[in-house]
Image 1 (spheres, helix red, strand yellow):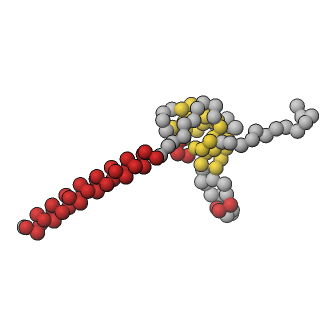
Image 2 (image 1 turned 180 degrees about the vertical axis):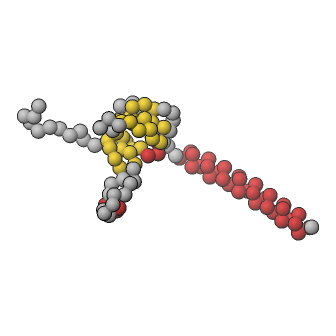
Length: 110
């Protein structure tokens, strides 16, 4: 019975220490972590790591886009529209800012 009591005390102490350490790690992570904020009309890339059959996965680009942010639903969820017009609702962790150059038509094209 004494052994069981000591084991229970050790278990409770370990759980308490683990809880304190986890809270400390979360606090440190949250102090450095920054989620980008997107506004309506911003262009973004969508992380979509699908694998196409018959192609080497290392050579496939996991980013689709550009997409246009249509609406910010809350801090971490956005409604985006593809160039084809399809709407999607995605988490902000799957988005990154698009910094590409807009394609320009050749001279003489209407």
